[in-house]
Image (cartoon, rainbow, N blue to C red; front, side, top):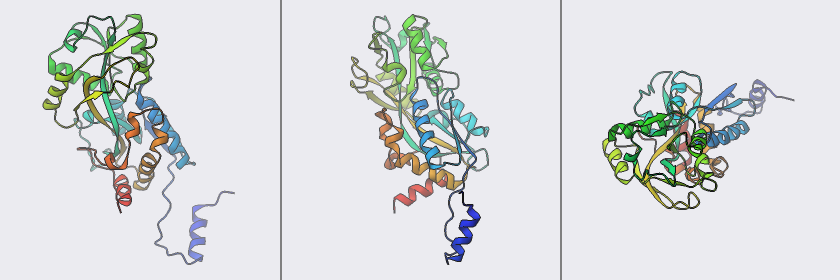
Length: 309
């Protein structure tokens, strides 16, 4: 039999529990989490997080909404059409967050990093990024973090390509059948859409050492030159590129007690949420507060303070 919150409160008062005792967090009717496209880590991590939140909020309808990823997720948050969303850091710092008013966006925490991966067939004549000039290249879906970062990078270099917009899984299929000549993916590693290719279709990852440094110097903050380990994809060696932090965002208007539970779920059930994704396995409390220019949601800040006592 379901016991009402009013009955619990009356029973507590009768037992002499002080009226100022903290109440249980409110139970929202729905929590919608914006994730990512087919073949991207955002979709898989987001789905796992939604399942964990459904366990924490058994009376709430928790929905993992499939999206193009970062840019769309930020827009949906600002429009109030989702409550939570995943995004890489770089497009967030270029939009007004408006954390002081109801359509503002705050951070639940930093999760893990995405790596820019430029994939070409093993037999392709393309050996450097500049060799993509005029070629058919997937930029990821419209309103994705891949599209945002790829456009920023190629504009910086003055490089023009025949850009196509599609999910990473579709881009992998089109790379195999020759419809495109390269795919760009800014996502966690290993990327599902890329990981299945080497066994059936030999590929290479382009080295981006100079491009990574130039981007980091031109846009200080979100970009860090890194190396994709040789163990990431079978048969491929290490690859120099750059990484961008990923954040879990929330509408600032979302109840602080709800966000506190969301934050606790992310950082205490990280092994479950990141299962099968080594890079996402780096989700931890120590780096969780490193959200750059994006302020922590009051509920998230409250949880982080509680674990530091």
